[in-house]
Length: 272
Length: 297
Image 1: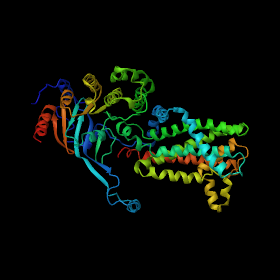
Image 2: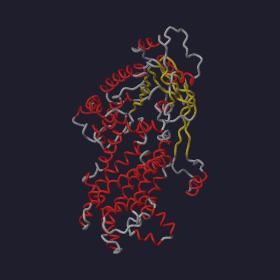
Image 3: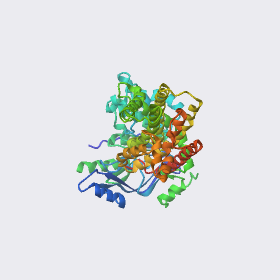
Image 4: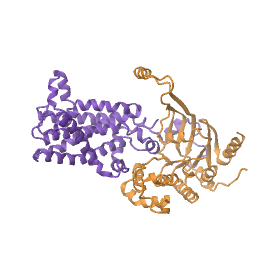
C-alpha cells in the first residue's frame, strides 16, 4: 500500500547540515483567527444593526474561525518543507501568514526577506488577454518592465496555453480552468524568491505540465533559501521535500522526515 | 561563521531570540511612511499598467467598446439638459448647456473615482491575498483610471463649449492646474474611502447617497447664485466645498459669463490647493496606517 521512494534530494539536505544552520522562517506560537460575515441571519433588524454600529459591538452573525492554534517551528536555508493535513487543517492559512498576507492574532512569524506565495489563485483580470495578464502579474510581483518584456514570451511558452492555437491574445475568461491555472503558475514561477511558498500549484494542469512545473520548482528551490509546499498529492511532497509538517485542525501533529510523517499520516487517513 | 562548532549555538534560544539573532523581521510588518512611499514609487509601473488594464477591461464586453468613454458623458449631459434646460427651463444662466456640462463632468470625475475607490480593496481581495505589494497601488490606479476617463470626457466638453459659442482664450490653460489639483484631491479621498470600504462593506450601499447630497451642494445642476439665499454660515460652508471650488475654477477657465459663488479668484485657487494638500497627505497617511489590515476578510 505504502509506496516507498528514496527521496532524490536527501544528499543536498545533509550537505547543508554540516554548516551552521541559518533560519529563514521562525514561527513562534502563531494563532490566526478569521472573522466570517454570514450575511443577515435570523434576528438582525436594521434597528439592531444600527444599535450595534453606535455601540461598536460585533454582530452576532460574525463568526470567528480559529484556523491556526499556536504553531511553532523553524525553517532553515536550503530546506524544502511539505505541509500536509486534511482539508481545513490550516495549511494554506499558515502559508499566507508566512507570506505576510494575513496578520497573526497572537504570537509572531519572523522571516528573512520577503517570502513569496506561489498559488493558483492569484486572481488577475479575466477581461484581459493572457499576454496582458502576464505583464500585469509580473509587475505586481515587483519586476522591472524591462525584465518583464524579456521574459513574457518565455512565460507563455512555459504555460503551454498556445499549444492549441493562439490563446495568449484572447481574454482570460475564454480559458478553461486548467489553462488559467497553468498561466497563473507560470507567471508566479517566473521570479526568483528568497522564501518560496507553494500552495497546491503542482496539482494543476495535465501530466506534461505537471512534469515541467515540478522541474521548475526544483530549480526555484536551488535558487531559493527555503521552499514550503502545501499539497494533497503525497507523491509530489515525497519528490520535493525532505522534511514534512503534518497539521490537523490548526495544530502541529507531527514534524519530521517526510517518509516518517507521510507513513503516519497515511495510517491516520486510512483509519478514519 | 563558526563552522567548526559542534554544538549548535542556537540551542536553548526561544523562537523570538533565534529570530532576533539572525536578523529576521516580523512577517507583514508595516514599513515606515518614507519606506512605504519609496516602495510605492518602485511600483509605479504596476500602478500605471493596472490603471490601463482596468480602463480597457471596463468596456471589453460592450460592442461599441472604447467609444463608450465618450458616449457615456455625452448621454449624461443630454439627459440633464433635457430636464434642467428644457423641462425646467433655467433661463437665468447664460449658455446653460456649457455651464451644466462643465459642472457635471468635473463632479463626475470625483464621483466615479470615489465610488470605484470604495471597492478598490474589497473587489481585489484575490490579488491582495495572493501577492505582496503596497496596497495603496490599487486605490491610486483607480484614480488614474478615472483620470483617463476624464480626459476623454474633456474632449467632449471642449466640443460642447466651443459649439455653444464660447471663445477660445488663454484662460483655458487654467484647466490644467485645476484638474491636477482635483486629481490629487481625488487620490486622497479615494485612499480614505478605500480603507473605510475595506473595513465595512456597508459603505458601498451608503456612498451613492453621500455623493448625491454632495452633488446638490456643489451647484452642478442649477445656478450657484441660489446658495446666496442660504443663511450666512451655510453659504460659507458651500463656498469652501472642494467640489464647488474645482467646478468654479473650470467654469472660470472655460466660460465667459458663468455666475460664480466665489468672487475672488485667488481665494478659489488657495482653497483648491489647500484641499488637494490636506486630502492628498491625510488620505495617504490614513491608508498607510491600515496597511496590515487589508485582505483580512
